[in-house]
Image 1 (cartoon, rainbow, N blue to C red):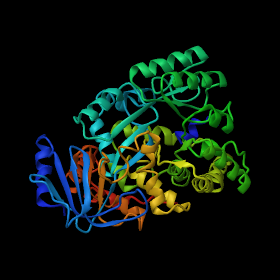
Image 2: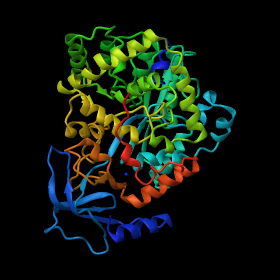
Image 3: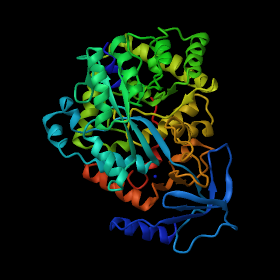
Image 4: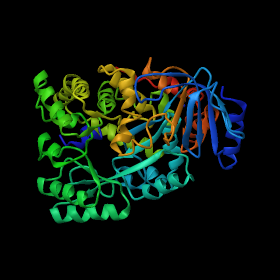
Length: 485
């Protein structure tokens, strides 16, 4: 079975409401924002700081302290955070973003719609769910200017980290989604070109040979680019760990090397080998869960309430195309996928964590049933299901991604001096990780986006996509928990 069948397989104060109106009129955001009487979840360790005021100036946290002692600067936007919890915003470190580069997989109608894709609608659901940083593991040419527009503040969307995908020819994702290489020279040239074009990282895929993989690793090191992604079929887990690849993209990439051996010893060996090697991991448990949902309920592709925000012709076409490929997976392979998930991927994730492995949230959003932002909260739920505490799960999406990016000194915790994006939620996320989806507002790069603005934008997205018939739009986060079969 070609491998790609398996993979492809958020009441604030009146002042805050006034800011929402100014934002709609494209006025500059206030330079200073104060969250008053908040319960702060700093994420430096497992604790809550009661009745705090957090002052943010030009996107940087200037002061955190007891509300009775911290003075709110004159002219600041005051957000009454009484009865709410303030925490770092979330990250999804394994996503894909639709666009013109997907044309080879699209119908004529969707292909026509891909020429001027509404990236503001594609990306805002991340923000609505408190996700302000995403790593795109199939970065394409049309996303390079989008990343620039976001960085300038011209597009209200999460920060994009773009990895260029590179693979052997003719087996999986077609060009220009991926760059196909057959020789080491082609792999070196493609890696240098990706760096020159502005990509942040290289993503290796499943059909690279040892020769082409080695060339990507060596050239990326010369270009100061991290290498992330799959474990190519021609290579072992150990080879990839020892090569210096920074991140492995799925736990199922490890499971395939267990060859059906789900013993505690085998799981412990691989977890320890990868953890000791300092390689990061996005388990993408929710990805495999959604593949299993496809097997169990093939007609329920667009049934989840959050699918109302994922109904543009490009999006629907991609989901339908990949879903149709799942239909061709024979029963014996479906059983193996289910066994790998339940007997290897899930216990491996917990053991890897227990051994000090560097877990991060990643969802593979864009694959069927994985709606941007919503899928992130579903992955957090998966982590708690396998045995992580809510605090441990939240670390994988708040502080750990900034450690991975080498930016822990400037972001990822709620403390003075950090430029951490912030998430204001209506219940304590340390008591139940699902509370991280009960979003009252998001502070992203110094801009406060309250619930009224979030709900308005999400209604627009659903309405433009023909999804206004549902009643989920006013409360999009009521559906953050995954539907299981």
